[in-house]
Length: 228
Length: 170
Image (cartoon, helix red, strand yellow):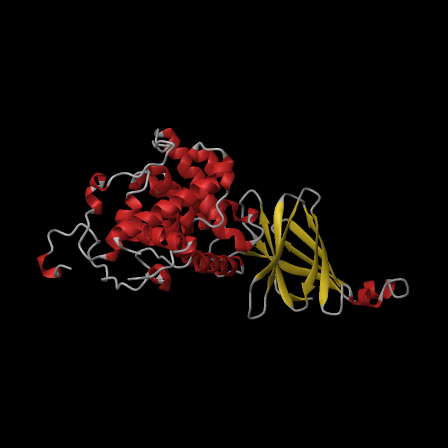
């Protein structure tokens, strides 16, 4: 492992990130909370927090709307960006979701479903925008062949010894269809397969198996990167 | 590392989240911009600081109880009605026990229009407990409500201002 003194211009990780320790994957560093920079909480925590925020807003606490927006915006950002939207397009999509939410919140009868409603609304809008700009279908072969490591983008330059960058490299090495599918699934509350099938132009029955294959590829890629 | 177990599906999805949260983080200021947008929209729809609070204009307890004494089950004898009004909207609510610990509520909104009605606990918990939609008839019923203090919240489907009743006991 190299010393951190000799680091070149660091593109990765974003400056200010805490160095990540290296416990085994199984021990749950995965869900460490870092609010503010976008959180990686266990999804169940996010959805139940969103429900609690929505409940308080409905009960007359107007400040709870701010909290709901703070809880869910980082998730919605990730969902929107899964559709290869620019930062500006993704921001518009997320903003549209919030405006629609304020206008249509009376249609969410079960407040426990607010997270699912918000992610689904974001997905639909993101897909619509992506289609309009010709970015709708991942340009990937059916075989889901992994890209070779030399095709890594500049942003994903590996800084030796940084666990996050290794995970990033593994995720980036996946075929685009896999990245889209796993990203949407990872950040959605109970994603509907019918919608995913339409967006990815795949038969609905192959979403489950494809997700399984993509996870398998990720597992192998992590092994190659020495992460697990 | 020497771990033989492979990461599970949930752990892998957790790693995907970790990678993207760090690799494609929320742009600075996005959350506050979204908060401003949502607050602005809420303000515009009358969902800002002050929800329209309905006034209790009529309440009757004894009268109905007298009328139902012999035929109705014992639980129905505690029935009473409330009438709330605000901005040309009238809500008539009949509250009756449905079991020893729960109550049912039959309501009528005039004029009727598509909206959602939520019963919201008004004690220290303050949580929506149930919601139903109602159509042009304006009729609704909520059953098996736990006894206690509640408020009703009426949310027109067209996104216009919601109404909230004062707290009452069921």
